Image 1 (cartoon, rainbow over the protein chains, first blue to last red):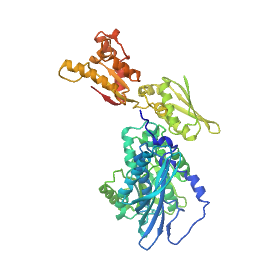
Image 2: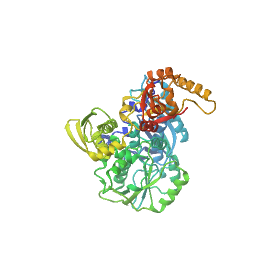
Image 3: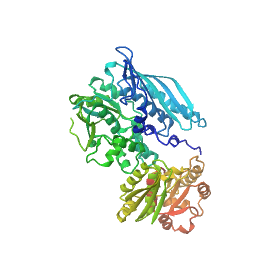
Image 4: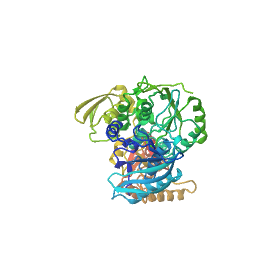
Length: 354
Length: 216
């Protein structure tokens, strides 16, 4: 019997759960010299998703890079997930992906056809995004890794930043949460077939439609929810916006089985690192421990989190429904204050929003 | 009863998988100590224990050495017993998979409920079932189990023309089980020539946990 290669066995941490912890990152990045340029619209000081540089009054270029270790066993699916995740950073800035380059690490003794499948999965997603894939760079490494560097364009006045949310804004998330936990349950062979199919479907859904459907609305802030989990990305938003964000945990869409698996302890280590990172900003109130775990779960190729004015939120939800995103959209919470001395995130069971 | 689970050096989610397996093996009230080397594992093992109704306490023994002590009381033991799934291990599993004690741990099961295949001519039916069992021996991916019940029980006893093929299958690790009630009913229990005897409870469990079931 031919032994089937299981890609996830090469990786200690899969997908965005492989991200270096936020505490470690901010410590290291804090020591780097600051670059400044009048045309640099978004740099890394606000921990945003990509760099944005103004070329003319009408065009800014977005540059981003993302890659990780296998989060699923099937090579083609892994390629799709990694590419969807990398392209997402461009959408999170409000842009349109144009050029993509492959980044590949692959063991020399593994069947090259596996690499071929990974690249095919990535190429198919780049094509679906309407961008072009033009080569890349590969090195030999014991642990397979794959991702893209993507360049996109955006109008300089329509750049979505991960801060700037205003008092009264409603927070809307375009994908259900739980990919880190469900992927852990898949690894433990405790996930249902339904949960496994759902997590793959969610991770391979481009944020393109969500970004396009949002174009007609006022977006005060936007980010994609990935390795730092919803809480981590909300805390970046709150911190940089001096905001108080209230989250209603019962209104959030989670993947099938995610809550059950979290209660069983199928939680990636990244979730606990994220909890530590946000602990200074977090008021968890009376919500169950399982919600703190779910909200700090590192997402691989997660959805877009929008902060939009209250009077546009209902229309935006309808626009997402019409756009048929293929994922579950939910209202996460609201912004209570945008000039707080101490930015924070409050968790409540329910938040009255719309 | 006290079980020690050594999950030192294991990365997420293996410590949880091993703990779940140990909880299943306890078979009554008792204690499980789980040794792990990272805090994520401490938290996750504690959650696994508590979600099973057991109590858990942890302590740090040294640098990168932790011990989670799980106490399973009467109530938790009952709960675990009723939730327990059959501990069947198919071939070709990795150690990791085997440790998972998963719900879907039986791959393909062949359920033979008659000594004939299909409706129509009885004689043709006998020829077809013999040929079906021979064809099973030729598969690249052998089934994990073959269950024989009702008239199917006549295929595993002395005088069956399929015995040689069944032996070939058994030698390659295929588990062969015949329904005991059925052997009794036909008065051929003392003639069973291959495999073991099973009951309706395990038949149901096996069929339920199978990834796929083939009925000739």
